[in-house]
Length: 129
Picture (cartoon, rainbow, N blue to C red):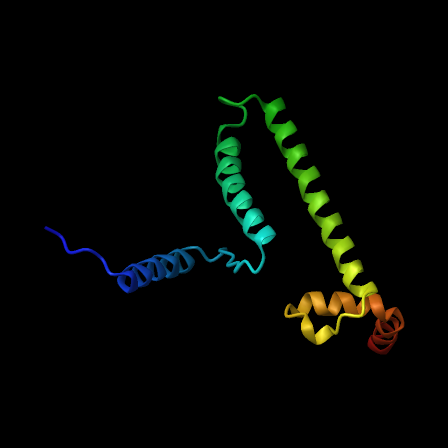
């Protein structure tokens, strides 16, 4: 009879599987969700990725090409909506008095800083020229 895996052994096994996945997929993206909405989005993207791969591989065969085109248009609409929501959230932070040091993500911090100080971005552009 096989020994039952301890919680620590299970964590180590899962960790090694994740490391192998990253090593075998150079295009892998690692996301550590920090909020419930990010977790929902990550789960949705994971499912969508599997669905999209299947749909693309069967487009024009078992899935009519017109249906595939509609699928792609729907995805573009969702992508645009996420981008619009992200931009509104960045603007919300830029319009607030949140200290930039409280923002962990460097790219987000830069985006907020550019919105708060548009003249500094222009100065950097002038300096580069």
